[in-house]
Image 1 (cartoon, one colour):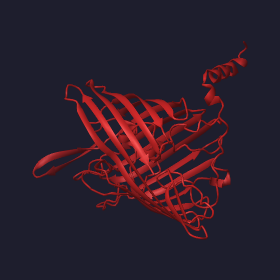
Image 2 (cartoon, one colour; image 1 turned 30 degrees about the vertical axis):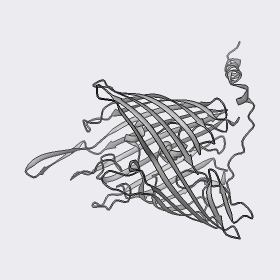
Image 3 (spheres, helix red, strand yellow; image 1 turned 135 degrees about the vertical axis):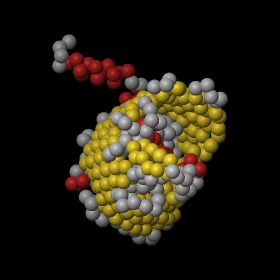
Length: 415
């Protein structure tokens, strides 16, 4: 066998190893890019085109939608819940078993003439809210989509930074996102962004986001002059698809790939993780954020990989509080994760994830190197709208050897 024929032989061997059912899949049509608003709402969930005729449209996975007689006005209501059982063992500590409602959401979408959009999302679970600032309002945006290459969105929204954070929590392969994301991602914030899903009219091959945000997180009153700027570009070189939906449920025979990079600068942040976690008593830091991500799907196989980086301008600040010297630390670190899954049938998937989190330079001593290794089994009764996921993770903190084991069983019902 010569060198030129070897790669082809490898591809043929891999293809022959796949189940016949997967190879029998036909090409799924690419998303239709039409003038006006994005094909998904600000939470990343797809929005179906307006159906002709009917004034009221209801369907599982689409909620209830009301249309005007001319079909130029659409009002849509959706809701979902995620009941979860979790069992956590950390070191020699007693096992923690709990039943919780991880997420309970209600969404409202209004679109007028495919140029204006109002989007609201409320979260009612205590885990949907920050401990020091109860705020059920998760998304509240107004979008103008009249210009294809420069749509404008204003309000409280997901910061357009990395792939997994901007993917809806309803469309994940695991019960939750990576621990690397929990530490290094950017949370929702209030601001304005300009975006395009089809830059240059290339059929969805290229897109971008450019925004300015308050930098303090979800709907918090600012007590400093800092702002955050964010920029992201992405491409789908083999044609548009659904990169914000984990798992290749459609098992499309097309090879699909999406690549994205982003950067952000948060000036004078008063939050420990830039836009989330605890609030400093007196300190503020400038945080630089960078990320790169890759998404791939082919014949039921899916892969998502991300690298995230966050660096503060200084490691700590010290002040005298009530006569005592107090030091508050910034949190600088970087990390990566890789996850992959395979749809063995139209309903059954297995997936695995590996990730590592690293402290960077002089930083908060509580930020330690950590690793995650886990797997998941999911059964999709009706795609992500009705599913059951069981996952297990082994998560050691490497410096001191403390290990956490976590088992989660989670279902989702999404009308």
